[in-house]
Length: 139
Figure 1 (cartoon, rainbow, N blue to C red):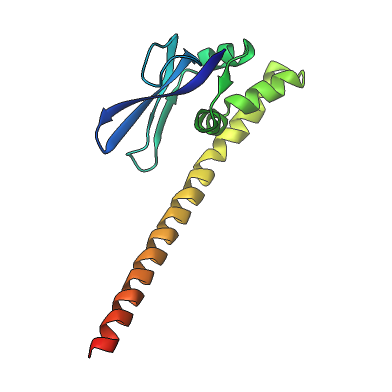
Figure 2 (figure 1 turned 60 degrees about the vertical axis):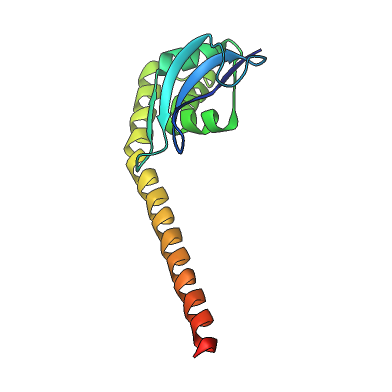
């Protein structure tokens, strides 16, 4: 069985991934059939480059994406395009729907970045509160 999965590269502590089509029995960083994209989680927002035609080819021929790869290709709109094709939509309708999807992409990215920022702020406030609580009994 062919899987669409991530192949790790990069330095220690600075991962960089290639999105690959590989036999499910081969090791994570072992032999691959084809490289179909890249994923860099070190940038903010993350950088994803995917060859959509090749991913569509593999999905149509039975390749199973891992959870992370599925979320990456879903965010790129590839899964939505395949869904529309299965619904027997015309090429013009598919193109119009994908343009709407991509127009909302910036809003989705902004929401995620805002969530991450709020989480960081909460953690910083919690650390300050804990530091103040540990200093108060000493004095």
